[in-house]
Amino acid sequence: MYKRILVATDGSELSAKAVSTALDFAQLANAELVALNVIPPSPVSYWDGTSRSQMNAVTVTESAHIEAGQNIVHAVKEAGELKGVSTQAITIKSDLVAESIISAAHQYECELIVMASHGRRGINRVLMGNETMNVLTHSKIPVLVLR
Figure (cartoon, rainbow, N blue to C red):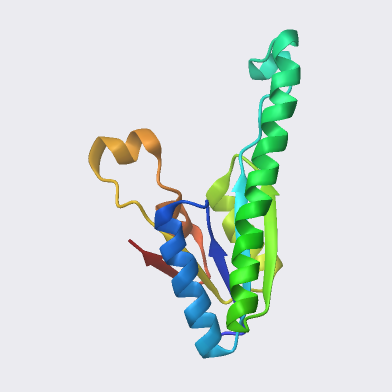
């Protein structure tokens, strides 16, 4: 069936449902799981809107985001180990979330992407974006979406 499954997680309660489902599915399929968290980059120069006094704060914030992202995927890896599922914990720093998810799925030769959707509609979808819809639209790999 599937040999490798990618689950995209941001650590939210909603994405925890996707993680749980992906772990169960990987266990049933005897597949490896790749847990991915995409970390947004912080501004790092004057051109990105940062002043000199803010640079130290940016470094601290960026380190916190990286650590939080790593904690999220390592928690998935630990949950996978408890279920006997071989799990890789991956973080990527990018502001292109959907593209990063698709790229990681190709790079790690995944045959399925599992992710959650907030189910936003109307103006909220336009204003807040919809990474899940972008993955669905552009991925050549099957995508399982949970709400």
